[in-house]
Amino acid sequence: MPELNVTDEEKQQLLSLARESVAACVTGQPRPRIAEPAGILNEQLGCFVTLHNGPNLRGCIGTFQPQRPLAEQVVDMAQAAARDPRFVMTPVTADEIPLLTVEVSLLSPLEETNQPEQLEIGKHGIYMTRGMQSGCFLPEVATDQGWDVEEFLGYCCSHKAGLAPDAWKDPKTRVYLFTSEKFSDHPQSGGPGQVTD
Image (cartoon, rainbow, N blue to C red; front, side, top):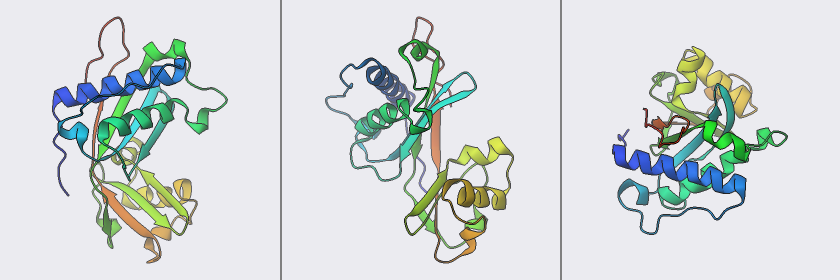
C-alpha cells in the first residue's frame, strides 16, 4: 500500500483551508479556494475532515471517491463537516470556531482484500460494502477503542454498515483496506494553529 508524501507546508495549507471553509460555511461567507493548487493539493485523494470542540465531536465527513483536486475536496468535506447531519439540532456556531480543533485525514487508494482478518490494527482503516449498505472506520478508531481485528471488523459491519457483525466473513461483502495520514491543528488563540500528527 503506497505511502502518502505530504510536506509540513502542505499540511498547514490544508488545515488552514479546512478551518477557513468551516468559518465560511458557518458565517455565510464565500467558500475559500486556491487558484492553482500544486503538489499533493492538486492530486485526487480521498480525505476526511473532523471537527472537535474539546473532547466533543462536532463533525466528521469524508469521501473515498474524490472527483476533484484535494484542495477543493478538503473545502467540500470541511463545509459538510460543519453541517454534519448528526448534529442538525446543535450545529457548529460562529462562536465555536476559535475553539475547534480541525483534523484532516488523507487516504490512500482503497485496496480490496479477501483476507480482512490480516489487517494491521493502527495501520489500516476499513471500508466495506454489500449491496446498497456500506460503512467505514479510519485506522485510529480501533486503537482509540482498544479493539482487536475481529471487533474492528464486526463493529464496522454492525454499527456503520447496518449488517450482521460477522458479515465481513461473507464473500458477498466486499472489504477494502486503506491507510491514512492524519494531522490536526490546535484551537486558535490569536495566532495560527500548530500542526500535530
